[in-house]
Length: 171
Image (tube, rainbow, N blue to C red; front, side, top):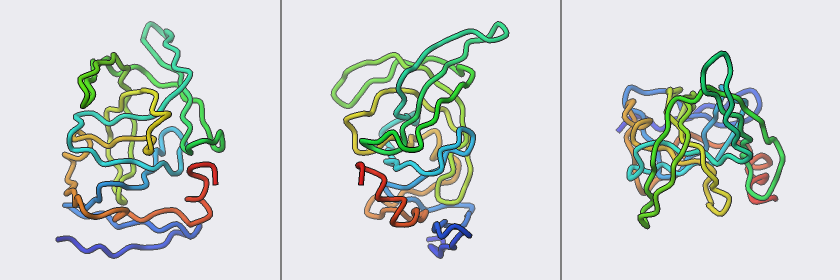
């Protein structure tokens, strides 16, 4: 297995280094640099094809003859803190079926995801994950870029300082 040595950034956050085969746990703290989300707690889900992001106020519109979407991301549970409103081109549309069999049409956008110290371009569906513990799911399409999932491990990519983590669940 690749080394699990971590490094500390200037702001005190702990980040894992890049590897050609990067280990990841079943849950990780990730960054979405394209849209200004510094930290969001994600579940690594090999059962999901596409990654999914909690989004609200989803509005489709047209810009220069192309389909775009405006949405708000709330990275912290039970809090409006650090929410961002984002506009991105619509990459596609998918019918996503949950493990219970419920089918939901979703918009798909492309964005960079910083997972375990590696930045990958991922297709991300937009949906309400209000009642879910994790605001984001990382699916197989993102993981195929050289990640190895260790199902018994958590936060191999490091995590933000405790004061930042406490923002989750309104603490």
